[in-house]
Amino acid sequence: MNAYSIDTGIFRKYIYTMELKNRQVDSYIFDKELTEKKMIFISGPRQIGKTTYASHLLNSRYAGVYCNWDNPLIRRKYNEDPFFFLKEYAGGTYLVIFDEIHKRIKWKDILKGIYDSIEPQIQLLVTGSARLEWFRKSGDSLVGRYAHFHMLPVSLSEGMGIPLKRLWLCSADDLSRPMPSLFEKIEGNKKSAEQQEILEHLFYFGGFPEPFTRSSERFLRKWKQDYISLLLTEDMRELSNIRAIDRMEQLIDLLPERIGSPLSINSLAQDIDSNYHTVKNSITQLEKLWLLFSVRPWSKRLNRTIKKEVKSYFTNWIYAGNEGAKFENLIATHLFRAVTLWTDCGYGTAQLWYIRNFDGGEIDFLITLDGKPLLLIESKLSKVETSKPAVNFCYKMNIPLLQVVYGPGIFKKVDKDIYIISAAKFLSVIP
Image 1 (cartoon, one colour):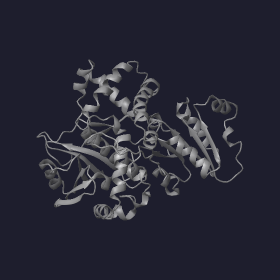
Image 2 (cartoon, rainbow, N blue to C red):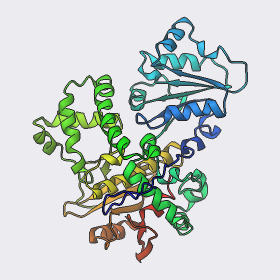
Image 3 (cartoon, rainbow, N blue to C red):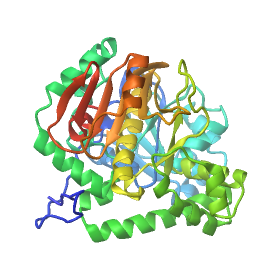
Image 4 (spheres, rainbow, N blue to C red):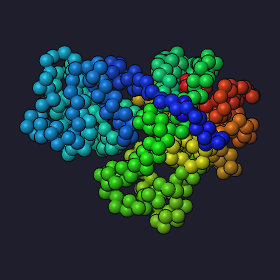
């Protein structure tokens, strides 16, 4: 395997091409309890695998048609016949995939008219890049007509092909007893060698399908460069008409070294000779394109905590700075993906936070479910003693603390409700 060594940065001599198994989104987007009689929306970062997944559905499971609205021929067909996509429909279940339709003027009115006119057996699946996520929020003409889901970077459990029903908080039993269930799943987790190999693969190649599966160092370097360029030269201009692309590039260059720390907009503005509002708007645009996501501070029922400054992480951790920041970013993306999936699936409103007080005490992550603190998580590249502030937060909030480390095969209780655990062991039990 192309296992990347964090300590030396040297590849092993043999090459292994990683295969991406079934995407976990397939476990729930056609769940009738969630999506019966509704359009299905899937949004997420560019090149995350939405089109590949949708095309696979037609090739392997459903009769139907794929319509990419970037294609001038599709737009011409629609102008000639608004129901052109039903030309081959002969009754029964039929899947119609509209990709990138949100780029068309009045796309919501188009979908509303189609949805209100077609037979119930015809299922509409609407996919799109990050812009679908934000354009979707700009009006309410489709309210009640769709169920929205996200496709995010490949997680360790997804890379292993673990069924969703076996993962934490993905069953009624888990939700009724969340913490006992988590520790039962961790203790029953025995595939440490395979888990660690996939963690190493993810750490180096990231969670986007193409570099993940190609396992090529050359391709990864080229892909990293081209992906940023694509977002800035195409998607950014379409989304916000930003002209100062060079300033945006400067901002992106500064972000890797700020991963894991509360983000000072004023400091960034000084570094790129700009102003607070311009930089804040630029960060927002990068979040809209899923290059970044934010983790906000939690302050409820805790004294002297920071309430305003967010932490920003790259959706794909390969852009983070040093190895410690990259590891924390990997953990952050996995947790962000998990809370998004739990919320999408109706298991509750799950959210990801961090905690920091004015005395310098900090803990990397807090997971809440329906507004209630559930689990504290601290990420450490190497196995070290748990920090005093983390322990204090654990005792004050009366919830468990996991210190997640890179090394394999570790699951150790060090005090009441405080554990040190291998990242591979923990990440393999969450979506």
